[in-house]
Length: 445
Ligand SMILES: [Zn+2]
Image (cartoon, rainbow, N blue to C red; front, side, top):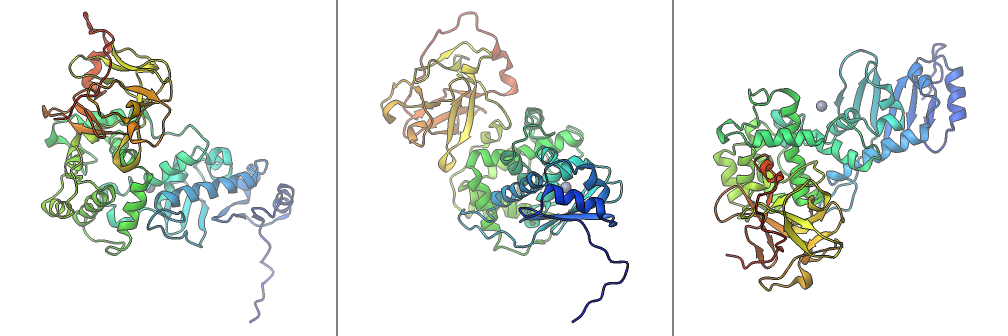
């Protein structure tokens, strides 16, 4: 077959990662009469106007394309695509196309294509520096990967951010407009509403309007990752891929699929947890989860801090805070203050357990020699994989919304509660504090 190009045809500036140099790119752009230019990496095609390409001709095209590749790989990986996770599938050999969209409007995304409007940041489109902090581009590229089968209407613009956040963790930029402590505070405000007012699907609800509510709700999806690790999303995608077609019908059906498959992926009955978040599981969902016969997740897991540098852990009886001494030293209870020695981060460890990492020492709360002897004092030790450094969060026997920390195999009863809005008063010292009492293991009930 012979194809004859007419006189109107002319070459387009074309940059290939690893082959073209910046000098050649400049020369092609200078010589071209085409209004468009194209760049290509292993994972993306970029089609932009020549004008925008010229604007950013001084930035490194290699760095840009490598950043797109890293972002694309990170977004694939969280969904169990192209990595070694159980049930993973290979990445698509098709490159995602990113197109500069010659209109003023909003970015949008469809199969394998992102359209980025001319009135949005061209730095995000065409410089590594801009792309490193562009939540918008991470989000749009995430639409390629989200699973419609469990993204019911109220979730459609939220599950997409699972991938955006994976890009955030991979890329070196530290600033973007989302994943902020304020969004978690909005979530806490929502979680503090009476149960009857917590309605996940009511994005326009009176209690929390607009984007605060939107991103406040999104924290649940990140909280699930903190609780169960990246493996939670690897498994959720893996167990969902073989079930039901991509377009899985009604909102109720998609919502049910999400809650049942998430329970399966977590290895926990999440009925109470999702109820606390206002997802209101219907009877079909409850039956579907019950049929899995999994141990129940405490509803209080909905309170585990997201996007937080750390939190105070205050004892319910004394109101005092868990306090780290010198590295490898004892952990004590002391009057609560705003110091890093009293800030602890919960980091997901294996099997739904947590590590408690102190913000001052970066060491973990540990049981010396994994002793199960009641009365054993607790220490902080370098974080490792041992069960002596892993903890479970449970519900206290008083039935109130306080945590207890349960270590294997001894329970630390009623010892600590996470910081919640109602603990603000604990920031003040008690007039007659129980001084420096050590934190000890007590037998479970
Ligand atoms: Zn979107």
